[in-house]
Amino acid sequence: MSKSNQVTITKGQKFPLTIKRLGIDGEGVGFFKRQVVFVPGALPGEEIVCEAEKVSTKFATGKIVKIRKKSPDRTTPPCPVYEECGGCQLQHLTYEGQLREKKDIVRQAFERYTKIPLEKVKFPETIGMEDPWRYRNKAQMQAGLAKDRVIAGLYARGSNRLLNIDECIVQHPQTDKVTNEVKEIAASLQIPIYKPNKNKGFLRTIVTRVAFETNEYQLVLVTAEREFPKKDLFIEEVRKRLPDVTSIVQNINPDKTPVIFGEETIVLDGKEKIHEKMDGISFDLSARAFFQLNPEQTKKLYDAAKKAAQLSGKEKVIDAYCGVGTIGLWVADKAKEIRGMDIVPAAIDDAKANAIRNEASNLHYETGRAEDVIPKWEQEGWKADVVIVDPPRTGLDAKLLYTLKRSKPRRIVYVSCNPSTLAKNVTELAEAGYKLVRLQPVDMFPQTAQVEAVATLIRK
Image (cartoon, rainbow, N blue to C red; front, top):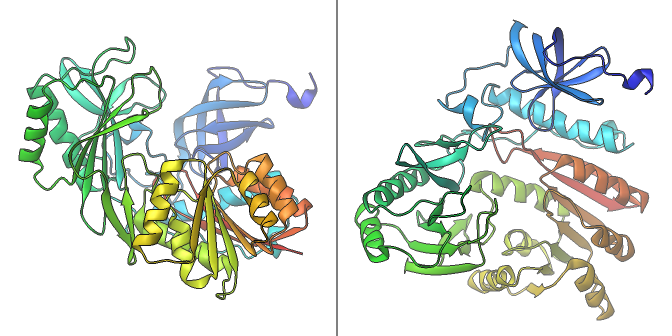
């Protein structure tokens, strides 16, 4: 082992530490004897006494014993279960501080994974919210039992202990109301609650999605079994307590898995889908359809993507990973034609229906992988000028990267939810002749460490 890799910290050791920056998960990052130390809850600029909890050859994690010098951005978290929950990571940091540090997280990723000089790239401040609370339109609360009482919430930080959450201050208030009513109904009707350790029981997860502009909302009961005990009584009670509910749906997931949804979905009462609008654009959302969780910031994110695309009305545009067609609809008024693809047939069905509903005749959607569909279109004589990609956290698939390099669109707009994979992908595209000209951070999830970014790449 080289001297630079020798372990210099032991478990339980206490030592002074100056926090230099935030890590990708919102933890404070400092260095002790050249070893990196991650400390949850510590903020940049703070001087602390740290106690090492876990030590490896590459890094250590610790906890705060004492704060000797406090950050001026430190604030008191308003959530009563913030320390236990772990759903949010940055409530102890002022919102101005969050926006500044999220830009720095994007910067860190590009400094680590690329050789691109960011001083030569347009790199504006993070786009934030006026009111960074109560912004989430969807709640997924796990059902459980605590001393024979029906509870629902999230698992406590770093454990398999379910934490009951009656109120979550980043969720739309209606989701709290629905979850609490369903808990009471399940208790009064003695509905069996799922026990993950035994893989037995019925009710697993209470999912609520609210349409911000139309006020429609959907209740999804994820169950381990298809047979619904006291189903009619349950629906009757939901209707009595929540008379304005738009859709009541059952999703069956019999597998022992942390994945929320199963493959089968049954409409129990009301409509199959709820209706949402964003700046006049209409969407119908089924129980498993992907839709951005923060409607207000989604508008800003898509506006940033639209600005990056620089459309004049003459361009052919590809919306890869199109889902239900949200980005395509958002930029449709500025493009000649937009084509999108997704591997989920139901998403493509929704995208086509959304295009018809919004009378957007310049949209075309197909089921399939982008790396297969794009070459097919080019063989048919249709080639894109602009490609918009909005991939999952894992980033662009290697085959799609290869396809983009071969296809050579003039402009690529990359909407990212993971700065690390964005930076890695941009490096590969830069090697293929693309230049990063703009990098716009967007805060889609205030109070958490997550940050989105819109990258604009043009072919040299």
